[in-house]
Image (cartoon, rainbow, N blue to C red; front, side):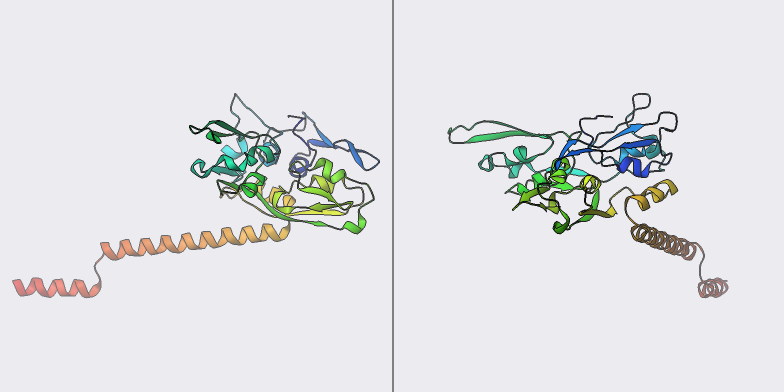
Length: 289
């Protein structure tokens, strides 16, 4: 566990099937976050399934077995790999943007390497390095890039509701804990920019007045069928989302079954002539005699 990366969002504790993760509360003084919430592991209860490492939105958790960092539960297809991806089309890059993607990245996952152009007028971009071990897929780089060079796929989809009337004066706890700077103070009140949100729900967790609510309504992941994942999905989202996923899976199974039957019927039709064809061949055989 990397304590510097963890913001105590609690998603790992939420889904842990063994309840082996203890949540330690934050410390707030005069509307400021003095100490972030954190987690602690009960090594005796942990079964090393790796669900926590898969679901962590900040790359704060990792698990290795015999030097292999891929989770056992993912290998055994009992838990999916979350779909999160960042792609770059370097040909679209131009240094006139003043390397805004690098400046805006909250985790310093982007490093732009430049050199002076031949005419000496402006820097020329040689390479853009993206460290996916640091990237938290917040979309800041994609949304600020003026050339559309970057595309980011987030694993979670959801929404954030903020009731400003409940916000205490001079309280910036949600701003302090947000890992993507998706919450800003404007006219003395916090304002949420959902385009940058990764739906970790840390802000909801620390808000002293329950003024903010984060909900996840979808999780993008590899297609698997496993009870462990369905249990975790319900905890991460809602029964409605679980039901939707089950309906999609049922539809896929029915479609595959119909396609399979059609293929079998086609093979039978090819291998076995119809009754009329058999009669014709019999008449033709007798005629030739």
